[in-house]
Image (cartoon, rainbow, N blue to C red):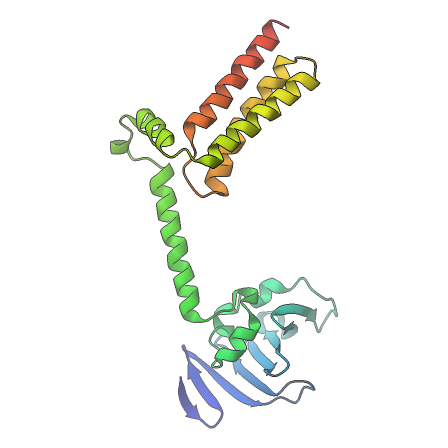
Length: 238
Protein backbone atom coordinates (compact mmCIF):
# COMPACT_ATOMS: atom_id res chain seq x y z
CA UNK A 1 0.00 0.00 0.00
CA UNK A 2 1.44 3.32 -1.06
CA UNK A 3 0.38 6.69 0.29
CA UNK A 4 0.06 8.89 -2.76
CA UNK A 5 -1.23 12.06 -1.12
CA UNK A 6 -3.12 13.14 1.95
CA UNK A 7 -5.88 10.62 2.60
CA UNK A 8 -5.20 9.05 -0.81
CA UNK A 9 -4.10 5.40 -1.03
CA UNK A 10 -3.04 3.23 -3.92
CA UNK A 11 -3.74 -0.48 -3.34
CA UNK A 12 -3.89 -3.35 -5.86
CA UNK A 13 -4.30 -0.92 -8.73
CA UNK A 14 -7.19 1.00 -7.14
CA UNK A 15 -6.87 4.44 -5.60
CA UNK A 16 -8.93 4.83 -2.44
CA UNK A 17 -9.45 8.04 -0.48
CA UNK A 18 -10.56 8.16 3.11
CA UNK A 19 -12.19 10.63 5.43
CA UNK A 20 -14.34 10.71 8.56
CA UNK A 21 -17.83 9.40 7.89
CA UNK A 22 -20.68 11.86 8.17
CA UNK A 23 -23.19 9.02 8.49
CA UNK A 24 -24.37 8.48 12.03
CA UNK A 25 -23.03 5.31 13.60
CA UNK A 26 -19.93 5.07 11.39
CA UNK A 27 -16.37 6.17 12.12
CA UNK A 28 -14.56 6.40 8.79
CA UNK A 29 -15.27 6.17 5.04
CA UNK A 30 -13.23 4.92 2.09
CA UNK A 31 -14.29 5.90 -1.43
CA UNK A 32 -13.17 5.94 -5.05
CA UNK A 33 -14.39 6.48 -8.59
CA UNK A 34 -13.65 3.48 -10.83
CA UNK A 35 -12.44 3.67 -14.42
CA UNK A 36 -16.00 3.13 -15.68
CA UNK A 37 -17.15 6.07 -13.50
CA UNK A 38 -18.88 3.88 -10.91
CA UNK A 39 -18.64 5.44 -7.47
CA UNK A 40 -17.93 3.09 -4.58
CA UNK A 41 -17.84 3.88 -0.90
CA UNK A 42 -17.35 1.94 2.33
CA UNK A 43 -18.36 3.37 5.70
CA UNK A 44 -17.40 1.39 8.77
CA UNK A 45 -17.34 1.24 12.53
CA UNK A 46 -14.80 -1.29 13.77
CA UNK A 47 -15.97 -1.03 17.35
CA UNK A 48 -19.58 -1.81 16.48
CA UNK A 49 -18.55 -4.35 13.81
CA UNK A 50 -20.65 -2.73 11.11
CA UNK A 51 -19.87 -1.93 7.45
CA UNK A 52 -21.93 -0.06 4.85
CA UNK A 53 -21.19 -0.69 1.16
CA UNK A 54 -22.45 1.96 -1.24
CA UNK A 55 -22.35 2.10 -5.06
CA UNK A 56 -23.55 4.48 -7.76
CA UNK A 57 -23.63 2.71 -11.12
CA UNK A 58 -22.72 4.94 -14.04
CA UNK A 59 -24.34 2.83 -16.76
CA UNK A 60 -27.64 3.02 -14.83
CA UNK A 61 -27.50 6.81 -14.78
CA UNK A 62 -26.08 6.95 -11.27
CA UNK A 63 -28.63 4.67 -9.58
CA UNK A 64 -27.47 4.10 -6.03
CA UNK A 65 -27.54 0.98 -3.85
CA UNK A 66 -26.24 0.20 -0.41
CA UNK A 67 -25.82 -2.83 1.81
CA UNK A 68 -25.20 -2.99 5.54
CA UNK A 69 -23.19 -5.85 7.04
CA UNK A 70 -23.36 -6.13 10.82
CA UNK A 71 -21.30 -8.71 12.67
CA UNK A 72 -20.60 -10.51 9.41
CA UNK A 73 -24.22 -10.78 8.22
CA UNK A 74 -26.03 -8.74 5.57
CA UNK A 75 -28.87 -6.97 7.38
CA UNK A 76 -29.88 -4.38 4.77
CA UNK A 77 -29.67 -4.33 0.98
CA UNK A 78 -31.54 -1.44 -0.65
CA UNK A 79 -32.03 0.62 -3.82
CA UNK A 80 -32.17 4.34 -3.08
CA UNK A 81 -34.13 4.92 -6.31
CA UNK A 82 -36.93 2.38 -5.98
CA UNK A 83 -36.78 1.92 -2.22
CA UNK A 84 -36.94 -1.83 -2.74
CA UNK A 85 -35.05 -3.87 -0.16
CA UNK A 86 -32.93 -6.90 -1.06
CA UNK A 87 -32.42 -8.52 -4.45
CA UNK A 88 -29.38 -6.44 -5.44
CA UNK A 89 -26.59 -8.76 -4.33
CA UNK A 90 -25.31 -9.27 -7.87
CA UNK A 91 -24.51 -5.57 -8.24
CA UNK A 92 -22.15 -5.82 -5.30
CA UNK A 93 -20.67 -9.15 -6.44
CA UNK A 94 -19.82 -7.65 -9.83
CA UNK A 95 -17.62 -5.12 -7.99
CA UNK A 96 -16.12 -7.58 -5.51
CA UNK A 97 -12.63 -7.16 -6.96
CA UNK A 98 -12.67 -3.44 -6.27
CA UNK A 99 -14.16 -3.79 -2.80
CA UNK A 100 -11.54 -6.48 -2.05
CA UNK A 101 -8.82 -3.87 -2.62
CA UNK A 102 -9.95 -1.81 0.37
CA UNK A 103 -6.72 -0.80 2.19
CA UNK A 104 -7.99 -1.89 5.59
CA UNK A 105 -7.73 -5.56 6.56
CA UNK A 106 -10.04 -5.15 9.55
CA UNK A 107 -12.84 -3.87 7.32
CA UNK A 108 -12.46 -6.78 4.91
CA UNK A 109 -12.68 -9.15 7.88
CA UNK A 110 -15.93 -7.47 8.96
CA UNK A 111 -17.38 -7.94 5.47
CA UNK A 112 -16.91 -11.66 6.14
CA UNK A 113 -16.71 -12.77 2.48
CA UNK A 114 -20.19 -11.49 1.68
CA UNK A 115 -20.62 -10.72 -2.05
CA UNK A 116 -17.35 -12.64 -2.67
CA UNK A 117 -15.37 -9.79 -1.11
CA UNK A 118 -12.20 -11.20 0.43
CA UNK A 119 -8.46 -10.66 0.73
CA UNK A 120 -6.94 -10.86 -2.78
CA UNK A 121 -4.55 -13.65 -1.77
CA UNK A 122 -7.42 -15.74 -0.40
CA UNK A 123 -9.34 -15.35 -3.67
CA UNK A 124 -6.29 -16.40 -5.66
CA UNK A 125 -5.80 -19.44 -3.43
CA UNK A 126 -9.47 -20.42 -3.80
CA UNK A 127 -9.21 -20.08 -7.60
CA UNK A 128 -6.13 -22.35 -7.65
CA UNK A 129 -7.90 -24.93 -5.49
CA UNK A 130 -10.98 -24.86 -7.75
CA UNK A 131 -8.79 -25.33 -10.82
CA UNK A 132 -6.96 -28.21 -9.18
CA UNK A 133 -10.22 -29.87 -8.20
CA UNK A 134 -11.62 -29.51 -11.73
CA UNK A 135 -8.45 -31.04 -13.16
CA UNK A 136 -8.70 -33.98 -10.77
CA UNK A 137 -12.34 -34.47 -11.73
CA UNK A 138 -11.48 -34.34 -15.42
CA UNK A 139 -8.75 -36.95 -15.03
CA UNK A 140 -11.02 -39.12 -12.94
CA UNK A 141 -14.13 -39.16 -15.11
CA UNK A 142 -13.01 -38.21 -18.63
CA UNK A 143 -10.88 -41.01 -19.98
CA UNK A 144 -8.48 -40.45 -22.88
CA UNK A 145 -8.09 -42.91 -25.75
CA UNK A 146 -4.91 -44.38 -24.21
CA UNK A 147 -6.70 -44.92 -20.92
CA UNK A 148 -9.72 -46.69 -22.37
CA UNK A 149 -7.99 -50.07 -22.58
CA UNK A 150 -9.18 -52.48 -19.89
CA UNK A 151 -11.29 -49.69 -18.36
CA UNK A 152 -13.97 -52.01 -17.03
CA UNK A 153 -11.53 -54.33 -15.29
CA UNK A 154 -9.60 -51.44 -13.80
CA UNK A 155 -12.74 -49.74 -12.52
CA UNK A 156 -14.13 -52.91 -10.94
CA UNK A 157 -10.75 -53.69 -9.35
CA UNK A 158 -10.51 -50.17 -8.03
CA UNK A 159 -14.01 -50.43 -6.63
CA UNK A 160 -13.24 -53.58 -4.65
CA UNK A 161 -10.10 -52.05 -3.19
CA UNK A 162 -11.88 -48.88 -2.11
CA UNK A 163 -14.94 -50.40 -0.44
CA UNK A 164 -15.29 -48.91 3.04
CA UNK A 165 -17.66 -49.21 5.99
CA UNK A 166 -19.96 -46.58 4.47
CA UNK A 167 -20.37 -48.78 1.39
CA UNK A 168 -21.57 -51.70 3.49
CA UNK A 169 -24.06 -49.31 5.06
CA UNK A 170 -25.16 -48.32 1.53
CA UNK A 171 -25.67 -52.00 0.69
CA UNK A 172 -27.72 -52.49 3.84
CA UNK A 173 -29.87 -49.37 3.32
CA UNK A 174 -30.52 -50.23 -0.32
CA UNK A 175 -31.47 -53.80 0.52
CA UNK A 176 -33.80 -52.74 3.32
CA UNK A 177 -35.40 -50.03 1.18
CA UNK A 178 -35.96 -52.35 -1.78
CA UNK A 179 -37.22 -55.17 0.44
CA UNK A 180 -39.59 -52.87 2.31
CA UNK A 181 -41.17 -51.62 -0.94
CA UNK A 182 -41.39 -55.19 -2.22
CA UNK A 183 -43.31 -56.46 0.80
CA UNK A 184 -45.46 -53.35 1.34
CA UNK A 185 -46.69 -53.56 -2.25
CA UNK A 186 -47.51 -57.25 -1.88
CA UNK A 187 -44.53 -58.78 -3.64
CA UNK A 188 -44.46 -56.34 -6.56
CA UNK A 189 -41.33 -57.18 -8.56
CA UNK A 190 -41.79 -54.16 -10.87
CA UNK A 191 -41.69 -51.74 -7.94
CA UNK A 192 -38.75 -53.63 -6.48
CA UNK A 193 -36.89 -53.32 -9.76
CA UNK A 194 -37.54 -49.58 -10.10
CA UNK A 195 -36.46 -48.80 -6.52
CA UNK A 196 -33.34 -50.96 -6.73
CA UNK A 197 -32.19 -49.57 -10.09
CA UNK A 198 -32.73 -45.94 -9.11
CA UNK A 199 -31.01 -46.54 -5.79
CA UNK A 200 -27.97 -47.88 -7.64
CA UNK A 201 -27.81 -44.79 -9.84
CA UNK A 202 -28.48 -42.45 -6.93
CA UNK A 203 -25.80 -43.91 -4.66
CA UNK A 204 -23.27 -43.48 -7.46
CA UNK A 205 -24.16 -39.79 -7.71
CA UNK A 206 -23.87 -39.45 -3.93
CA UNK A 207 -20.33 -40.85 -4.11
CA UNK A 208 -19.31 -38.41 -6.83
CA UNK A 209 -21.08 -35.23 -5.71
CA UNK A 210 -21.27 -35.36 -1.93
CA UNK A 211 -18.46 -37.74 -0.96
CA UNK A 212 -16.21 -36.39 -3.74
CA UNK A 213 -14.73 -39.74 -4.70
CA UNK A 214 -15.01 -42.18 -7.61
CA UNK A 215 -18.24 -44.20 -7.47
CA UNK A 216 -18.00 -47.81 -6.32
CA UNK A 217 -19.09 -49.46 -9.56
CA UNK A 218 -19.62 -52.91 -8.09
CA UNK A 219 -22.17 -51.40 -5.71
CA UNK A 220 -23.98 -49.63 -8.53
CA UNK A 221 -23.91 -52.68 -10.80
CA UNK A 222 -25.39 -54.97 -8.14
CA UNK A 223 -28.38 -52.72 -7.47
CA UNK A 224 -28.97 -51.79 -11.10
CA UNK A 225 -28.67 -55.33 -12.41
CA UNK A 226 -30.88 -56.66 -9.61
CA UNK A 227 -33.40 -53.92 -10.37
CA UNK A 228 -33.48 -54.64 -14.09
CA UNK A 229 -33.87 -58.38 -13.45
CA UNK A 230 -36.70 -57.83 -10.98
CA UNK A 231 -38.43 -55.36 -13.30
CA UNK A 232 -38.27 -57.71 -16.30
CA UNK A 233 -39.50 -60.65 -14.23
CA UNK A 234 -42.38 -58.65 -12.75
CA UNK A 235 -43.35 -57.19 -16.13
CA UNK A 236 -43.43 -60.44 -18.11
CA UNK A 237 -44.39 -62.85 -15.31
CA UNK A 238 -46.84 -60.95 -13.11
